[in-house]
Image 1: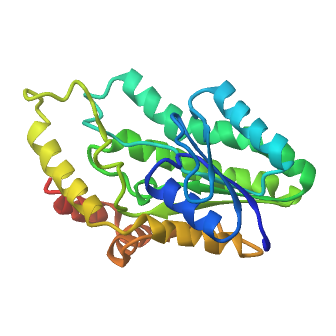
Image 2 (image 1 turned 135 degrees about the horizontal axis):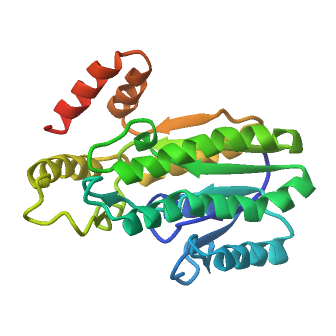
Image 3 (image 1 turned 60 degrees about the horizontal axis):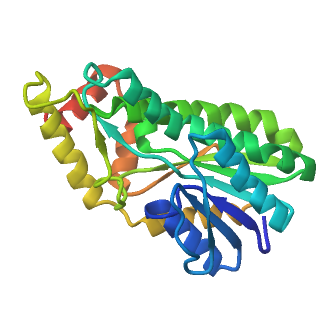
Amino acid sequence: MSGSKVVLVTGASSGIGRACAELLSSQGHTVYGTSRKPSPPSAGHRMLEMDVTRDDSVLRAVATVLEEQGHIDVVVNNAGYALAGPIEETSLEEARHQLDTNFFGVLRVCKAVLPSMRARGSGLIVNVSSLGGVVGLPFQGLYSASKFALEGLTESLRQEVASFGIQVTSLQPGDVRTPITENRVRALQCGPDSPYRGAFETALGIIEKEERAGAAPELVARQVLSLMERKQVGVRYAVGHLSQRMLASTKTFLPARLFERILMSYYGL
């Protein structure tokens, strides 16, 4: 894909989404960012209201871009959040909301943009997943589940739309310095008397320490820009510190029990 593109970036009010919107607009692309509570235009891109958990909100934002630009070349599905807590103590309501945002939110956006991309015979969809979609992380079970589901959706979708000239790929960031750390939602039932409390606090402390020392969100944005400039994109791309990318890759060849022991030891379990 070359030349100026029309790009839609979800979850663009901060973190990876904002970094993508700012970098891509600085490179001459027409960028629409979205968030539930949009701010005024920033660094050359426009912000639209979009709640990815609501069909009408998604359709309205996509329709606005199509009305103003006539087409959408690239979608970066970045909107999401992290839910933490023991699986046993995570309510079904909390679990549903995590999946509704991180997984079904992506599905809603894809369904909204695909008809126009199909009609035009081109398009690129970049789904921002996570290395937590490759490795199940302790006390991040529903977050990992949402990203594992997103990986499967991406694999299937790219096969289905390839004949229409549409490409779909997955980005798997490791730890990145974003507000996801401060905005992490904790399962309400996991209180001081929880039998998981000690292990949960230990593991979460390590997770959040790694996040605060993580890669800059601009690193992910540069990867998105690189993908936009390629004629063909692969199935997935890991982004972040080399040590984390290597750890995730060892899952494919280490015995499962050995990999699990290494992971549990790392998180103090």
